[in-house]
Image (cartoon, rainbow, N blue to C red; front, top):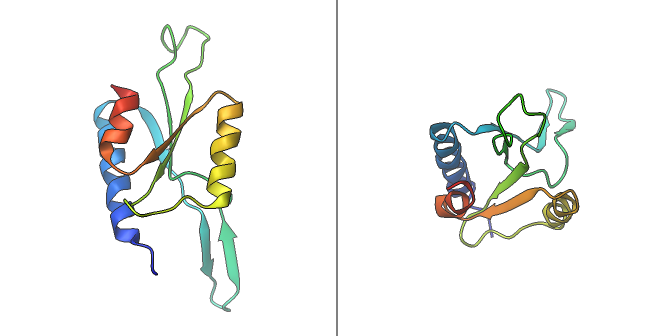
Length: 114
């Protein structure tokens, strides 16, 4: 069965728009690979890296010396499954006290940022 990339891509855009509206520091990341002109597969990004990285505002403001917590967001369609590499990333994030969101809808992200 083919993955529904369009659903996930649309969800990523909605999440990025929401985070922008909330003025949350965030960026979109890509992992995967492409074939170069010779047909050789060139991989980029780390396996399992979430789709979006965001950060809560620093406690006490930017000059307080306290950094905000990192938020990793993996967007999945309703039936999308997390890969073993993504699960390993989620576990590693937890060991550092980061927040990991498996987002199947914008509401999953809003629950954390509201």
